[in-house]
Image 1 (cartoon, rainbow, N blue to C red):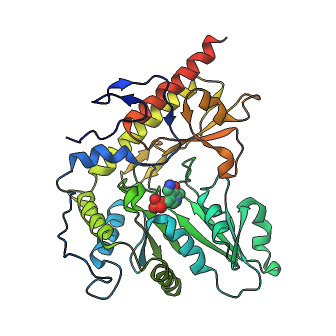
Image 2: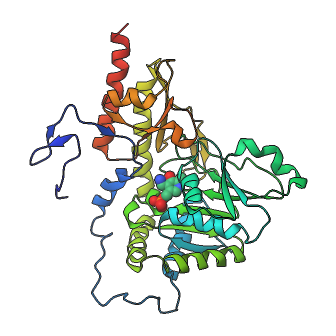
Image 3: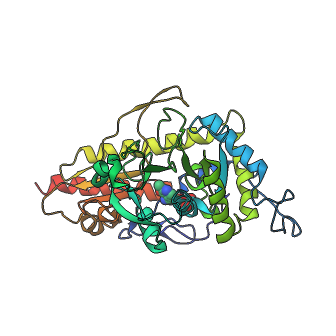
Length: 389
Ligand code: PMP
């Protein structure tokens, strides 16, 4: 069994069974520990042991910073799921998708253009796109807000304005499958497909874009390993990204690459479906429970998601998103986060995603204990709504 090292914030005592009734439930972080029970079931086959002498070198034997065997396994994972075309594409690793996001922006914005490229995303967007672009403060590109502001300038060839659009599909927060919004000769896209896995969405077709980014964090749940990869069509872009990785960190930790390889072997085992079946069932049950509770409320609502045909499962799949995008409907509840805080729930304020504070993102990917408490607190809020009438 798993040793109990520390209790969840809502429990105390030697075996973590004393419930602290006024504790705060953290539904803020997107830490994907919902997959922990799957890995507990596969503890032995997913374990690695490294002798002290192993993998000490800066490079692999072929001189590269990237394990070819791991690359082959990543291609295999995509082939089984059918969520990305990898044939004839270049693959590069990064310290989480986080590192690859900026590496990608840099690689596709040429040096020395007359005006900086505009980096845009559709509201509500993953805040790191803005934070990173502003923090790194390059003269070659600037964060320029919501895509909808730029639809006409993107097709106007006389404006000679270049755009880099982040497309997040399914979107981090509302779980919608997305396509690029901007069109035109001066638009380049980066597809962030962190959640394009059967746990969170139907897989209608393999992605076949110029540049896509994936992360281990949302595939197997190992966010702490800091591992992501990009699939790239253009060789010149691939080389520029390799340079970025080489100059910034000299590649991804070899221990991480070894661990990822071991994990992916378990993912691929059998018919390569077991983890996804567990992941989907868990996320769908959570979504069903939360939607049922919120459907009884007039004070709160959550996003509507359409079922889509999934080529991986061969059927139309119901929703199982990673996040609930909760809206406070009452005029006076302008700061939805405050309403939830009073009910001992921490969520993430909609304004961080470029939306109104009337919205809050609630994470549903954490442990079962955490989700059960979140659900309990939401149910209590909904019950109070009726009691006060
Ligand atoms: N993109 C999206 C849309 C995400 O939600 C996340 C993680 N929350 C990332 C990228 C970054 O993932 P990583 O842990 O690999 O850095």
